[in-house]
Image (cartoon, rainbow, N blue to C red; front, side):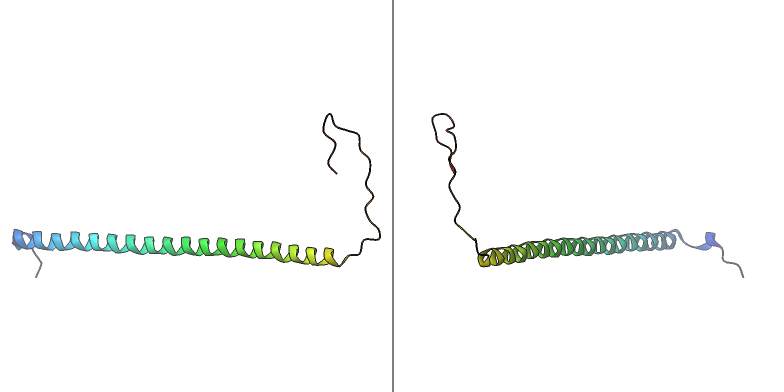
Length: 96
């Protein structure tokens, strides 16, 4: 027995066609939502990595500066700096 599509009523064909279009739209909306969530997650991950890297760099600079200042505070200077006479720069003396 063969299925004759001409024997199906028009209303049934419209109903089945409407369900097929609705299924296609549903798949499209679900895929678009999934892709947008995926892109949002990737963007958030990239932002988190950039933020973490920047914070690590700032902490490294601060740590290095603290070590440098601590080391400089422990260094003994053998003598006082001697002031040097400098020529005048116009009407204002040079600031030493």
